[in-house]
Amino acid sequence: MNNAIDSRTIALAALFTAASLILSFVQIPIFPAAPWLMYDPSGIVCLIAALAFGPKLGASVAIISWLPRVFLDPFGAPMGMLSTCLFIVPAALVYLKGKRTRRASLAGMALGAALSIVLSCAMNLLVTPLYTAISIEQVAGMILPILLPFNALKMLINIAAGQALLAPCMNVLKAQGAVRP
View (cartoon, rainbow, N blue to C red):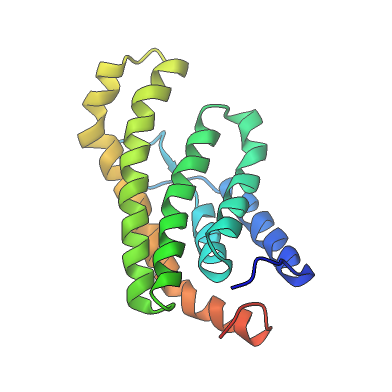
């Protein structure tokens, strides 16, 4: 795979970034025990970008699409960037190394999801006490009943959507000559 980025790839990266940015503002409560924790589907777009164009471009899409949110949520946005990148980069690396098979995509997504879940729980220990009146001990008490299940559910949704959308998206991108067959 060559490192040159052509204008088509730049345009597609911009489209993926715009779609991810828009979807980051779609906030869905998916865990009744913690209605303040919201799921947004932007990670799915970043995942497809990473699987189609590689981990660097996928990470770029994730980071750039989260940047505007830094002004609205200076603690949550960096956590979102890290969590998303830790999900999509391993997924893309395993997928590309595994010759772009369904099994490789699932293994990569599972690895990335596990890493993202661990990071999200750990980051909450550090970040949540900075902007709330909740102590580290209280956050630690929320890991098993709230944070772990929420993040696991979020990743399961991302994996299911990623698996459902990967083949159709890759087919369209291949037909347009945007990615190699």
